[in-house]
Length: 415
View 1: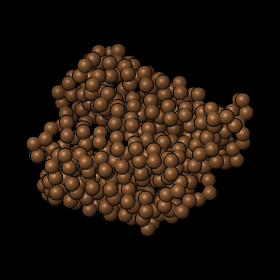
View 2: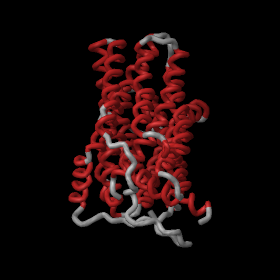
View 3: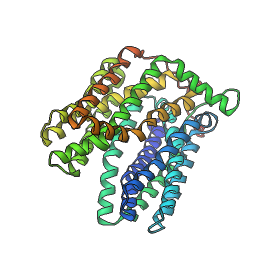
View 4: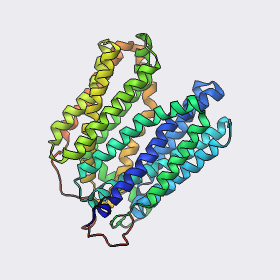
């Protein structure tokens, strides 16, 4: 088997994922800035963000049976193409009315939900087609996600400052279109087995499997809680801390960038040796470093230089642990349920994000900044420690393939 054939599906998946994620991170800065500069209303800015997040969560949760019935690469490509067309319309519309911004944000969210889920479903089969350990595939995909998180917002800010919002939107549309083209080129052997029953019965089967698996339930509960606290921290507590300590928005941006950039390095290390690391201890050390340390350093009133250093170290922990969690999740879900279960996990992971900022503001108003940071630190620690004794961390036989993967022929079946 030639290296080009072995790594073709995984390389194509990484290119599609990197393009789509970078486009999304550009929109993370560009859409709010467009709304804020055209309307001057923070409330309408928040409304547009909600218009994108809610369809993302709802449509992704409902798209699981679709991914188990049809080709994941087609779902990925069609979703990215729909996002590209919606953003292209926005880029050509000058200063659009608020209702148009809301509709386009909803279209992008609804299209991106299934497309993101489809790429996640393709990770184990593309990794297996390359003949690599599962931790290697999840480590590289984590590195790609963190690199996009570090580069996308910075690129958006640079383009908006020098070329204007429309240029940033055109780049996002181009990247979505590139992701769609690359996604169509992904090929690997995989047999789809959606099982009997109607669409909603299959959706229920995925929910029942997730509910019955104690380890998956513990992981999902941890992700929901940590994402909720992270949203409160990043959108409310961190900016308020920076303002109260005489810092500006640049500290917030530098801290987040330091976190994301550092996590790329350890994600690549995990891709290299992750299959030899003890999962439980790697998880406990990595998540304690990546989550709790950021909150504690602010609660202690450390200077800005120390804060940036701690955020970078926290990023190292995050890049170490996320591939481990992803690999464990893939292993525990049978091939015929991958779409349904993984979309539900992602939907749950996002479910608390729209409310995290509101909760952070309420806690800040009731308890003050320092007490809020200590409360969030304690809650984060409890959330990440619980899976330490609830999860079966040992490696399991590969359940992500419905049948053995044969040597590829010149014409391979699509994912």
